[in-house]
Amino acid sequence: MDKDEFMRRVLWLSVPFNLVGALLFAFPSSPVSRFAGFPAPVPALYSTLLAFFILLFGGTYAWLALQPTIDRPLVAFCAIGKAGFFALMVVFWWLGQVPGQAVLGAGGDLAFAGIFAWWLLTT
Image 1 (cartoon, rainbow, N blue to C red):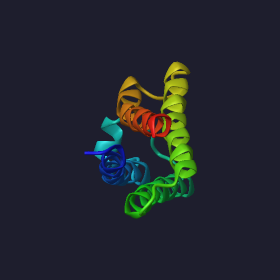
Image 2: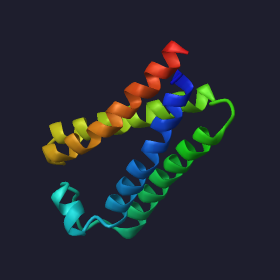
Image 3: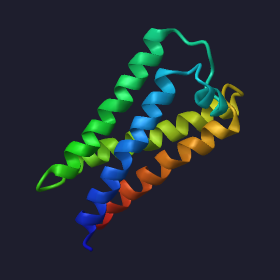
Image 4: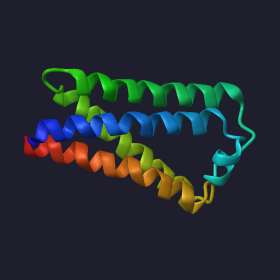
């Protein structure tokens, strides 16, 4: 399997990952979100907007995976987004605003960011 095919599979894997994340943020009072350490209650405007943006990123991953040529600048943007989300979780954990399981959950974002960066640097 070549690197582009591997990247397409990773992009497709990130779609359901983002869908689950969007659902967690959309319903922060749900038992699963509470277990993940999400604060509640949260104004619906904030949780809905955040879920919407997470879904947009998920849609972007699907769109990238379908393209004949994967757009490198958009992959870089996505890598920054994934790494930035992880970094923010670490900062808010350090400040005592989220529990450690939130950082562990965001570890998937860090892994995706690493794969995206690897693909960018090696192709």
